Length: 234
Image (cartoon, rainbow, N blue to C red):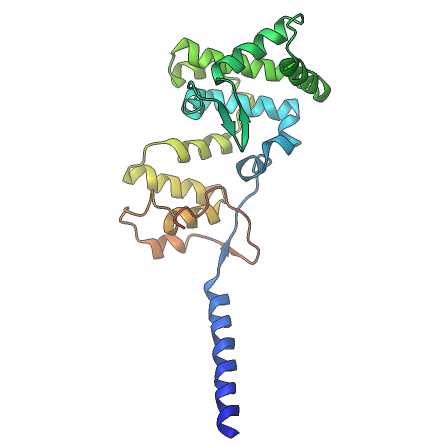
């Protein structure tokens, strides 16, 4: 009996000890949540923020400065458009052209496009959506570089934080660029994201960094926030 009690005590203490160690091993880091953060991991079709004209303007000007073709070239092909599980059995080029034409010509009698613009008018963002579609079309029709197109950007509407996050995601990685990305995330208070590129990112795994030292630059917090850059190693 004493032996059974002793074994039970050891088992309980072991479980308790493991839970304490696991709790100590789990550290969360501060992660700022900009107004556009839900666009990263949320559902666009149910997002109210992106439907506001001023927010659409900000996104558009930021994307123009960064370069629309760098962002959407993978979607502009002869295949049907699939975004966030939404399947549209039309070529992206055709969708953009048809939406522009149906906005300009009210006599175009196509139910899908009429309903699309009716929803935009109800949301009072039809004019900015029309402008965005024209900017996208101009980007792929003009064959101009992102640098040349950026001359037409309204800098007052550009969101610097979003622009820097896009640079981190899309720029080609070198030792210098990778370290710059880490420093930028720290400066912008995206510390959970910075932790992930340090320890939980296959793109950054081969860089010869002093990761323990860099980790000391990160501020911990008790609450977990979904980071902009998540763990992509699992």
